[in-house]
View 1 (cartoon, rainbow, N blue to C red):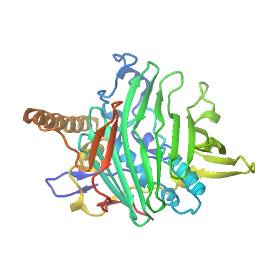
View 2: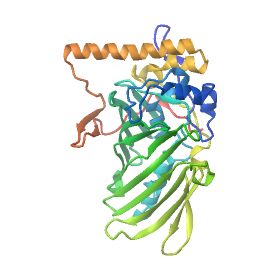
View 3: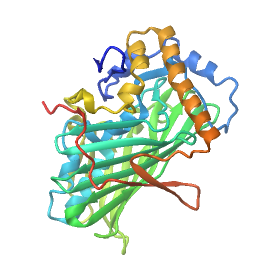
View 4: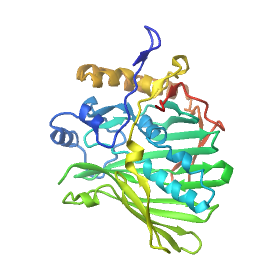
Amino acid sequence: MLRRSENEIKIVLTRPLSLNGELEADYKAPNLIHRILSLFKNVRPGSDLTHFKLPPQFNVPKSHLQCYGETVYCNGSDMLRRCNQANNSLDRFMSVVAWSISTLRPLMFGVAPYNPILGETHHVSRATLNVLLEQISHHPPVSALHATDEEHDIELVWCHQCVPNFNGAWVETEVRGKRQLKLLSRGETYEMNSPNLLIKFLPLAGVDWTGNVTISCKENGLEAELRYGPKSFFGLRGSHRSVKGKVYETATKRTLFQLNGHWDRTVTAKDNNSGKSRVIYNADEVFSGLKTPVVNDLKGVRPTESAAVWSELSEAIMSQNWEKAKEAKNAVEGKQREVLRERELKGTPWVPQHFSVTYTKDGGWECSPIQQWVPPAPIVLPLS
């Protein structure tokens, strides 16, 4: 935790989400299932939950923007850089598939990150990789990400809109929008979507990523289909966090590899020609030795930085001072409503600072970064 000066906002950074749920254990509210069901007692199945507000007892001390960013800059091995290293296009594609799997994080039942305010940003560097996120819409909630590694000719552009719906015994959040991974020196763009987040209350409580993900690259004519499976009705471990799928040629639909495994353990690829299998993803590499970001340049931290916007709330949650946490959360949300009212009175539209936005015919969002390269960040991830 850092202060700019006695009269300015604190900067509070917390350790990343881990595979074993240590963060969730620190902040989980008591009598969890009873408390959660009481929150939804007046919510009807099929309801839009984008306006739903969680009390701070159900928050982990970080924003959704920080969680998105962590999936890119915070891992034990640099799988992103590997995507551009292989000279063979098929090997590069398989590396991208493995990297895509590595971006999943085990969100925990009963706790959730903060909903970012409009204009909130998160800017972190890991070595030569610079990552910048911005909340470009509050209702509906839409987040944009731009990451570049100029030294290794890699660029990421994401645009995410989360649409949660309550179905009585569960909440399923559809993550709309696409992710682009560009290997600039190879002239290849890989497009992919995200799985949905399923939060089940009954009969067995839990959180899982579920649904289908497609990864495609027009330049090398390859595609992958991944199916993420939730825990079964009876909670059998074999189905929990499962990944199944295939890699095939776009033009001929000929399957090259069969994929099978679990994103919290290992995923193997079986060559359809030789019958041989190899491990393409190992969760131990991704989640081992995770570091907490640190402030490297205090003066360079934006007032819109997530770690600054939510610092009072994060500090209160970490000390389990729930009265202070409630006040801090109300203060942030109240200020946002006030700024919105002023903007509406003046007739001033909101314009994102780091992205240009277009709207698709089906009501979706597309984001383009304004800058070619993301500059180095004042917050960095230690490498050792």
